[in-house]
Image (cartoon, rainbow, N blue to C red):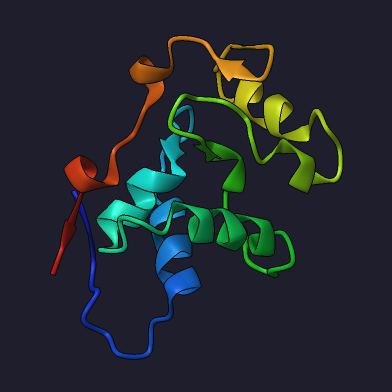
Length: 119
């Protein structure tokens, strides 16, 4: 189990989101809301989405393709420059997708509140 220290005063919201997203294992996905809840901002799922959109401009790699909506829909796919890029990345990790929906979503769901600890 990994640990993220939320007590560091120099961490901003997007940085916290990126630290969580970088820990999502290959072949697993999580939701905007699950990330927001984990970092103590349960009503900020939309801001997590903004962070995922902004992550494409970063020099570091943030696997934004592993963050979907609470139903397993690829709602952020239009931010990947190519409508099929998000799906292609997920399929390369073994997920099956039909009509922008991850099949067997709950089998692939990674909940940071269960997988990570906060210090």
